[in-house]
Image 1 (cartoon, one colour):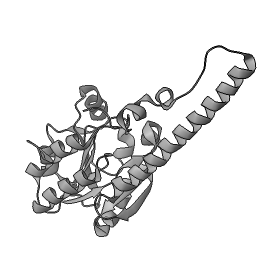
Image 2 (image 1 turned 180 degrees about the vertical axis):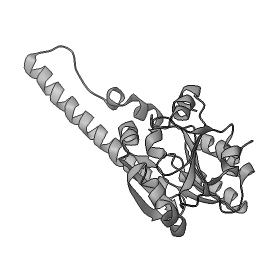
Image 3 (image 1 turned 45 degrees about the horizontal axis):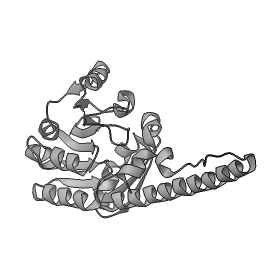
Length: 239
């Protein structure tokens, strides 16, 4: 699977608590999130569609799992960050998915940016198998993922958030609880709407200014900076 928003591909799990009370951290499909950061105080297990990414983390001391089911079976906490809603549903509920490795005490934190209704759908299905879930999309892009400065918006049961807040703060600068399951992705949608409006406003302002310069210089061609030039991905996929 490709990295979500260029940040990382991840299904992550925390395994059994050690005598030192440091849970084993299991990650599947990790990319730009550096092993040194994710490895803090935890055993690390990874699963990625990219063998190169797996090898990089294995060289740093991580173990490699074959499926999300393996990760879930060995873990206390699983964290996913995937491109879109279908990928999350498949990783959680599909063949060899997390639900097939479900056991008492397992929790899923989905850090993907997906539809809030899908987050709730997955959470309800997992709840029937005894698995708790938080949705926790991020803002900050690839640089934030590498630097550990992501802003994380979290929805779900407050008690589950409080239990794993410190884990989220190993990969982000802030982890803010915003409400019940699905609320994290609602907050992310609001964030992206604000970003898109700002992009469009700047593009419009630049277009007006360049048109003025064109008129002053007597240029024959009209120059503009529509949204498609500034962010073709946003223009094509989000509007």
